[in-house]
Amino acid sequence: MTPSDPFIQDPTLNGHAAEQVSRILLTDVPVFDGPSLALLLFRFGFNLLVSWIIIQFFYYKKSDRRDFYFTFLMFSVTVFLLIFLMDNVKLQLGMALGLFAIFGIIRYRTETVSIREMTYLFIIIGISVINGLAMTVSYAELIVTNLIFILVTWALENTKVLKHTSFKIILYDKIQLIVPEREAELKEDIRQRTGLDVIKIEIGNIDFLRDVAYIKVFYRPSNLDPSTLVSSKQLKPENF
Figure 1 (cartoon, rainbow, N blue to C red):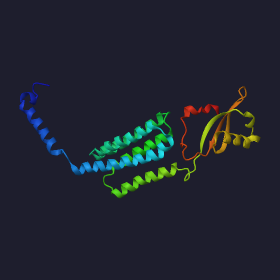
Figure 2 (figure 1 turned 90 degrees about the horizontal axis):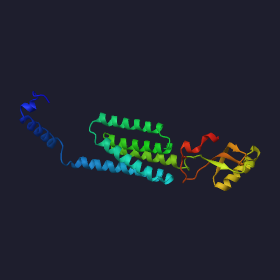
Figure 3 (figure 1 turned 45 degrees about the horizontal axis):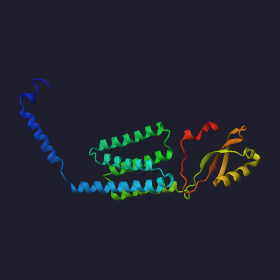
Figure 4 (figure 1 turned 90 degrees about the vertical axis):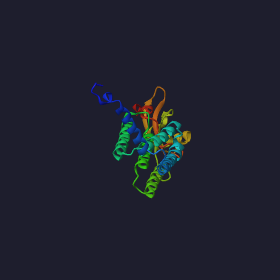
């Protein structure tokens, strides 16, 4: 700080500036704003309820992953509060776009998180951004928008509405059944030993020294089966 600094030349300016700042803080920022607090609590509770319904009844019911359960709920809380407490609309939009950009980076640089988990993370971020940013739409429109998220997620997760096909890779020991002429016997044997509703099979690498073969079994999952599989690293695609 140079000797010509006005705050050094006149120390009373420091006190005057501090007084102005304190006056602005006391007059422009209310200590308690009932309507604003009520709006925050209502929207926060509504957003948390919608996120919890999707996570609890659609994701957790099939996956049973408590780590992602915690992650999704905390994402919902954090994103909503970040968006809602920003007064500047441009900052809100910038934050929303930044969150989706981060989501894209995570999706394409992470191998251990399956597509299903990333999709649910995208849903939770989208719902939280909408509930925190949509301040000019009616409550009816906001509720309908959230109901659309819930209904579409339910429809896509429900095997009675939309038929799913999953697959498992198994190491099979009866290689005498892998010939095309005995495919029906192979399917029946796998069906009896695994209890899966086998649709089709694909034969991978065959090890005649150990009398085993890798078989990709496509089956129709039950309602309690997860819609996705483990990561691509665990599937060992080089065996096919």
